[in-house]
Image (cartoon, rainbow, N blue to C red):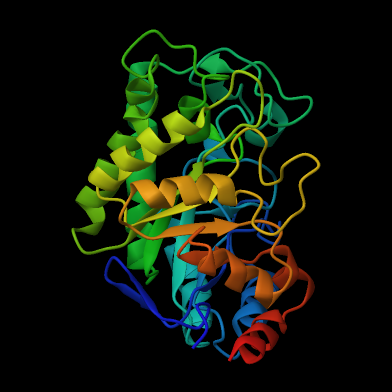
Length: 332
């Protein structure tokens, strides 16, 4: 048996293999974030045959002021639960577990997208995208509202039938902004050393756990490197990962921070594997990595080298809905 075809248990969730389709924004939702027929068709097509071990949905905004872009999927109010259930059901019919990814854009959005000034941990222009605006610094009271918004969105995901939720803290979005020293200049309990910069994460994790229960899987997507001068250090990423494990996270999904989901001039398979391997050595929960995996042998190599326990394949599956079938057949 190849490494890729081996089953794995993540919290209380049992995966039949190590191949996952990670979160990828499709921009197929309605302008208000509701599910559309084209979105359902997309996920049906990608999961048909049941060859994936798991799917993580594209990021869903947890509140209107946390929307990243038009046509982003919503988990922001109770009216979307029935829609989300339709999405969940169509993936389950293809014998595939599905995780709902939850996000707040923070300063990685625009006033035109949300109708108000973007917010962030500090009044610092976000370096993850071009032409972003100066955000307004969040108050402690506003931080607490965002924490509760994540919890309410997670409760909707569980009500809709999702097998777990993933908290998004990478690609330059709000929780990543708190994590990174490039965007977090706070001098209160939410800033400073890494223990302060992950405080909001711990509050989100606890609030989510309180509403979904002790056995419900909670993942965290960690922007483990900014790949920029003065950005997040590997040491701090490892420290954060260990803190998140102790807080009850069931899987860490390693990706980029302010560099988003690619690395400049790096296109080798699993280009975040340096960071995922370091995190994997430090924690006992499963670790996932994605990025640049084009062939099944790439995924197999990353698993054999202990770079991760689970491999995410995004663009290859985006371009070829039959990729998972071909990959599973080639490694058997």
